[in-house]
Amino acid sequence: MKTRCQWPGTDAEYLAYHDDEWGVPLHDDRLLFEFICLEGQQAGLSWITILKKRDNYRKRFKNFDPVKLAKLSDAAIEQLLLDTGLIRNRLKLFSIRSNAVAFLQTQKEFGSFDAYIWSFVSGKTLDGKRKPTAKLPATTPESDAMSKDLKKRGFKFIGSTICYAFMQAAGLVNDHMSNCYRYREVKALPGSRGQL
Image (cartoon, rainbow, N blue to C red; front, side, top):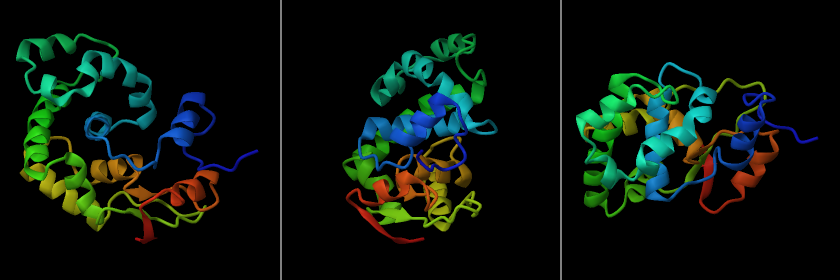
């Protein structure tokens, strides 16, 4: 039996997310945009709530195509507030459009969002080296800097705690517990570097 981080529990969907996605370095701009938007939807909720609604978010939000989402009308977003398969919070849903606009501007400035967002960790995955009994931090200096800069660029629902969760999910930091089988697998991926 494989040793894993404890947080996914026994839920099959959560386990698959932990085993296949969480912590794997992402460099695809569209996926980075999706991850950052979904982390914002999570604010005040558990990640499993968002994970179970993720397919519907992809369907309703044009597979997180920022070009299409930047053009969404107010009426279209208001209509989405009726969808029980989404988090029906007006500010959160409208933030996806404003984030798309900010994302496209940032992408244009840096050539890619990937180049911009990975600059906060100097282009390489940080190694959390988390002991099995360790409590994961909610924020780090890197997530503080990322949050501050994203806010300045017009992103919404992007506080430091959300940024750190995004960093963990998108592989900017390897926060698998050191005894988790995925820790060594992720660490072996190109771009890993020293401890936080």
